[in-house]
Structure formats: C-alpha cells, structure tokens
Length: 591
Ligand code: PEP
Ligand code: MG
Image 1 (tube, rainbow, N blue to C red):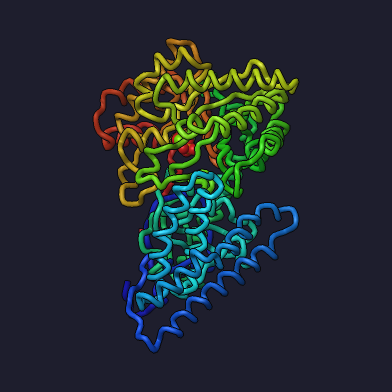
Image 2 (image 1 turned 180 degrees about the vertical axis):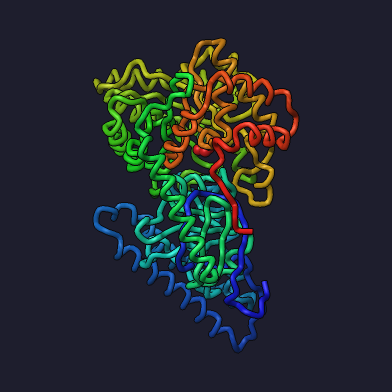
C-alpha cells in the first residue's frame, strides 16, 4: 500500500483470533519466505562463483544448525537429535553433490538446481521399504528449505530466540510454532492468514495473548519496530497510532482487563441459571501446564485434552511412559474432577513431520485423527495403554476424534479391549471401567447420532470441525472465514439432532468446540439441553457469568423460535434482539 506519509496512522481489519488488547513494537517473522524461486542461466565464467554461493549457503545453514544444537539446554538435548541428522544431510552426497553437479551440467542457478535435486530424491526416500529411511524424506525438505533461505537471503527468525517484548507479525503461524511462543517475550501476534477456528487462534486463546488473524497484507504494511495496537476483541490492528488513538487504546485495554478481572472474581461460583439449573463449565487444554489455568479460572474439569501437541514437539513418537507421566500430571492437578483425554488427532492442520508418509492433497479430509490411529495400531495402542494407566489415578474419560462411521467405534473398542488385556497380562494397574465417548464433528456422525449413542457412554460436539465439514469451509482459510458461522441453521439443526439423540438414549452430551465459549450462542445451547460446556480457559469466567444471567425456560422457548428460521442473518438478529444487551461484550469502535 502506498502512502505519502509512511508514519500516518492506518487501521487494518482482520479476524478476531484471541481477545485482549496489546500495544507495542512489531516484529516481522520470516518476511519474504522462499515461495518464489528464481530461475536463471549461469554464464560459464560465473560457474565457480555460483558453486561458491551454494557452498556458502550450505555453510551458513550448517553453522545455524550447530548454533541451535549448542543452545539447546541439556534437558532437551534428545530433541536436538533431529537437527544432528539435518546437519549430516546438509553434506549428503545425494543432496550436496548432486546439486553441485546439476549447476555444472545445466549451467543454472543454485536455487533451481537444488529444487530439481530435491524433487528427484524426495520420492526416492519416500518409496523406500525401511520406515526410518522413508521418514528422512521430510528431513530432506527441512534441510533444503534452510539452504534456500540462505540462498535467497531471507532471514529465518526462530520464535524461541526473540529476546525483547514484541508483537509478532507473520504470514502465518502453524499450531506448532504458536505453541513455542514464550509469554514473557511475545505480547500478541497478527497474521496474514488463518481463521477464527484455526488451531493457531485456539492456542492464542489458551495462552491468553491478543491475536488478529486473516489480515491479508499485514506483512506488507507493517514494518519491524512500527508501533501497533492489536485489538483481538474487534479484530483490528492500528499501525503508527496517533497520540489520541494511543490514549483511547490504553483506556480500552484497561476497561477490558477490568471486566475480565471482575468475571474472574466470580468464576469459582457454580454456573447456575437464574432459575436454578446447574451446568458444568470445563476447560480445553493443549499442554499439561495449562491445567493450572483451567483450575484458576474456576473450570469444573477438563472437557477436552488435545493430546497431539505432545507429539508435535518431538522428532519421534513419544513413549508410553512419557505419555503416562504427562497425563498423570494433568490428573494430579484435577484429582476429583473429570479429565477427558482425547486420543491423537494429528494431521489436518496439525501435521507431525515424522508421522506423515505421503503428502495429502486434502489433509483435512485425509488420514486424520481416528483414521490415522486405526491404520497405525501400534501408535494407538501405546497411547491407550498410557491413558488407561493414568486413568487408574483419577476420573478419566476417553474421547475419540473424527468418528464418521459406526465401524470405527467398534474397531476402536476392540483395540481398547486388547490393550486392557495386555495391561492385565503385564500386571500393570489400569482403570477397568473407563468411560468412552466420541466427538461429534463430522456430519455423518451427527446424522447417525441415534445409532452411535448406543455404542458409547457420552458425546462431545466439536463445532470447530462440524462447521468446517457441514459448510465445506476450511476453518483455517482466511478467504472463506467470513462464511464460517456457528449460527448457520444447518449447524443448529445438526446440534439439535445430536442433543435429542443423546437424550433419547440417556447419555450425556457436551460441547467442546469454540461455539461453547461464545456468550451469544449460549441461550441456544442451553435451550437444546446441553448441560456441560468446555472451552478455552480464558472464556470459562465469561461463560459462567453469562449462564448466571440466563433463564432455562426462556432459552427453551427461544430455541423453538430459532429452529423456525432459515438464514444466519435472521438468527443473528433474533439473538441480538433478545440477548444482545445481556451477553454481547464485543464492541468495535475503531471506525
Ligand atoms: C472441534 O473440532 O470442535 C474440536 C474441539 O476439536 P479440534 O478443534 O481440536 O479439531
Ligand atoms: Mg476437531
């Protein structure tokens, strides 16, 4: 964007990813990237110089890797193994030798030669019989990316290395990168891509840092060291704010924090409606440490423990004992409260490099979650053994993600029985009577809820995916983010169908998708009979507070009206007219 005065205040709008307001200096991460690779011919007399340029980039990549390895604290050394492998690969004959040969033979630039070599050797590794060698295909990509970055001169910035208090500005942050954010350094972040239900935004909410996503051109418009205001409530970023705007932002920040503190003061009181119905409001966690925050915020238990993040920070599958320790850490903090451990939901947007053999064109519709686990029984059984062992020490429920067919539940139960038998045979204590539930997050499961209810002890509705799959809207895609809406009548009808099926079959139904943390959606959920809600820890006090203002009978009558409506707009209008004053605390005043 051109402007005569580069320091003029500018307001850009995106998606409200995580609530809160922060004001500080911007810090651009990985601007430029390596997406556009140049291709050009090299004159014969420039050949040596081109080879030298390639060798220099490899050397820089090697130095960088050695530095990262040297900086890795002793207790994390085992995780640095993968980097050792990468540094060996840098000088691998196939990668290094062939790239030099290609530059010489074809007289083309180093970037293009490297790209060609990678496109030949990656499939060679992928097709190898040995699983270890197959996994090296991904490493080749990581290593070549590192060399590319040095060739094109883009600086890679390790998030973990940032050493001042800043606001991150990035094209996109993966869920794994977001979970590396150190709270004492990063005040908030803004990204060009992403949607409100993306895992990146979910993690920002768990970390309680303001975030605005889907800004499209933030990395073009914002420069490192620009002062910016991030309003994660309104989804707005102000660049180079004037003094007046800064004063206004400070005022709003204080107001937001005061309101949040006021909610927090009553968050340990029960969530009881005006007419005396009690609900349970639990927390979703990604990492064991977050359990403390759920407890602090008055959570009645863990409604969703997303276990895949323990697999994402590693270079190989975690062992049964490691998993057991993590699960037990969580249970020990919540000894008398339910802890719902969801089995591995990798792939989709949470790809784990060492666990993915083939690139999938559509990972979200691919070998994700239970589908992945059923094709990898050894990985699945290791996790189930760890969960059953941990369950012996507390009130654990197991939740299976992305069920779309009844056969998957039956197969899963068969594997669970095998795992129980193996633990019994090994004489290891485990919970014999663990409750099992399924996520209802694929439309086929919602439609078949009545039959599925006969197979399990409870349902948990995952609206983040249910909306994605019902509406055919990629939850992480900025371009369709405006279409992603929990108040679509199809979504509401599906939830109703699931709630009714659970009731008929006498099993509890909860909701652990982000919809459960949206105050304006609560009258609908309560009115449909949902008694247990689970949300990011930040939203627990707000949800509890909102429930206290609601009347159950009123919510039931309200749902009857909502179910007659056919457009999002009509439903939103009715919700706002009926409950807007009571529940809406988001105000966008940046016009
Ligand atoms: C969901 O899909 O609603 C859910 C809670 O699971 P996740 O966000 O981890 O996919
Ligand atoms: Mg899901």
